Image (cartoon, rainbow over all chains, first blue to last red; front, side, top):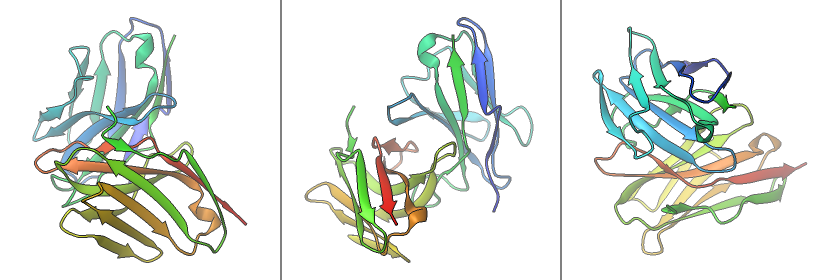
Length: 116
Length: 112
């Protein structure tokens, strides 16, 4: 079964540094997402992306965050200047169609980001 | 923000018996509900979903029930198997809105 793959599985960075988390969504999927889960808390929506632009974003997704689909296969999340509170598991997801009724999200295994 | 709540952080069930996981929501704009299962070191995996126009959806051992008036849904797993041991997340979305709102999860342990 096709999978969403995320790299790296674990990223350690110092506060103030830039990080890029990478994802390869399922190849025929058109909608892409980033979610995160801070340890012990809920999985939270960050952003959705379709047709090379952001279609929806949460209040967490401020100017420090950006997303990009630099080529036909990769989908990246960049955090410009990391803070301690950005430490979390970041999940990439993709879906074939818009809206949960048409096709549910397929998640990758996540990147654990640790900011020291 | 507690729009989706799973009040039981953990549940233990004997193998072969029924597991019932519960979820409550507050946002009446939610019209689609999903259950995801998560093993350690993996991402959430879609399990089963239900639209607000239905009150039941069944897929093999898994059944989801929706009670719109009570804003409550439940996931029934029968019979429970050891491989069902995982964290189960309830999630919801509103029409026209792409984001999923997740509950905090319930850790299900199936006792052999």
